[in-house]
Image 1 (tube, rainbow, N blue to C red):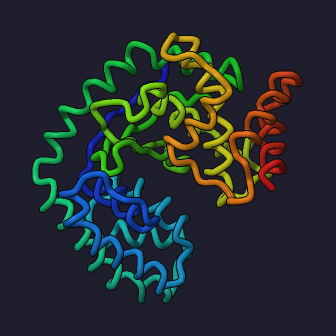
Image 2 (image 1 turned 90 degrees about the horizontal axis):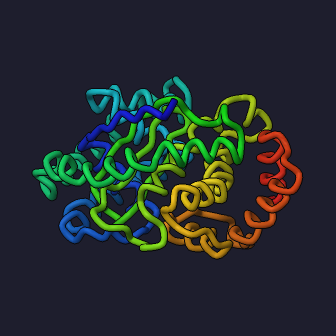
Length: 294
């Protein structure tokens, strides 16, 4: 049985995806969006800093929740509660955050007034590629790792290609976001492979896999752990030819963050070779990758 995908579009999710990129100092590929969104996005990022919030954790909750919660205040209450817990600090933070969130949303609508129509047109190519090869990739990923690792269903949140290609898995929400590009940013890495890689990460927050990994480190470990099996699975369905160098290409093209002192592609390649040779339980393999990253 294959993975059931629920394809969705949400303007606010798209706006926040771009705003987070601005907050990380990533240049936006869309000049319309950059002109309208940069200032309010930087103001929202400044509010996160002034509130002394753990920024990565805040965005990790805010963006996926934006696809499911109607109303900015309700969204912020949920995201801030997940980030810092309930209390007076949360209540005091909401008004300023609500104003900045509104500014980001309005700027995005002004820059992309036909966003939903554009995303509907952009969905079709990726969806057709997925229907042709996606479940074959997921089956092979399960064979290479643990068949229980493959999620039975998830939400795919299509967002505007603010970066010219990007995406993120939302492990806690059984969803992912992916930029709806019309062409592969890297010809050797089809976007449908990126989609499979994002889906493959979603079950890694189950206790059987992650009970020894700190929640704030898990997203990074999930990204890197699923790289080799996804690239090999793409070769199995004849989407590409796997070479060890592709791990480095994917790390760069898909913008995987890593500690500056770590040669992540080399670490992951060594780790995967050991996994192939010894076939450890997947929770043991993940714990080993954590240690190798230090």
